Image (cartoon, rainbow, N blue to C red; front, side, top):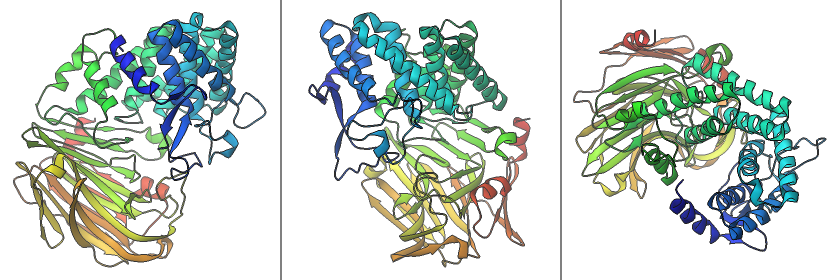
Length: 561
């Protein structure tokens, strides 16, 4: 980061810095782990944002900023659990107002997040801080390393697998602790081998977490004195940048889908800055390899599928498919939960005049993304055949922190195609014919049809509405007064849809075949036959992932070998 940008960031954060508490005040936006609620605590003193602020102050330099950083870091160190006998050993709470014991569920990732900043602070800026504080920080790094080793996450957890390797590797080098250093090196090597065996990150194509992964890998590449780790980081950096570049869509400026995890369907300012800075020739930024720059500019057609899991470990494979041309990008998975950080089917369209529209598939319970809905789909270029099943052992808004096990009260269940981005400022509407929506986005046609509707809840009802978010095209499963839902009692609950984008022809004919408890839907495409086979009744999440079947078109199968 350049000094001018760093100073701008510091000055923006300074407005929320409390010199008495010695922490940064932020709005309460966290919904996981904390027991605090925004109605009673609209603002909180965030510990990790304060650690980041201290790091930036030391990066910029100067005696005044160094003293302020020292004040912050004294508070940060004091909030870490340093008792090895406790289950929360080595980690931090989110907020000054809430101890680890008061949290809904403490977040072990905090050892990784704080640890990565503290190890770099001691390594690169320790001479700016009082020696007694440096000793405390070295101790905090050690405890964070121990917490990371105790937890020992696997290589499938992309971001934390890398971050934990960074903290323990650099922490071991800093503390001259060979056990920590060797653990970090081995963890990174294990992650590299695992990732290269798949061909991509399991935390696939994530606009929020891939930049973090790149930052951590870059820190290992530039800061570590362990040659093997530096070489592994370089190889993984290349893979990460290639993943971003081949999904970028120049016409819309979008990071194309599908996304394993994201916090926003539109790129956030920090994500835009990361991409823009990566394409500069300025060494002050983490740079994308020159060989991938053309992918950020090219409007040539792109079409590919790739596996995203270690099938032997997961018990199933999840393929990601992306299609792009000069006007649109369309991406989808073959399976996934519909929780709010997931984008199982996602498109961006150039609507003309510098406008772009996003198309996000959602399954909603009372207006919130519903992770007990399980998506299964297959994509052939600009067409997607997909279905929804219901899970009997999953959550409401989160698959771990909000378990409902298929029984809950709600007012509304619906499937939605949300047209967002610049859609709110465009004259968009959809024609409804039977179970089909058809709309035009600039010169690009969107078509979707519910080709199979088998549910004990009755027939789907179509609705469309415009609001500040854009245009929503809804298939309503149930709505009205709040009532009990019990997926275990359902004999039928399966919906199959045909979707196309940018086609100047009708939707493909879908052949539906029923065999006992299972339904197979298939279409003929220019790439070969594509099909999905799913159960008619709700089942457990793992069964749906392992037993739902997808047949990719022959062209895609050959492409993947």
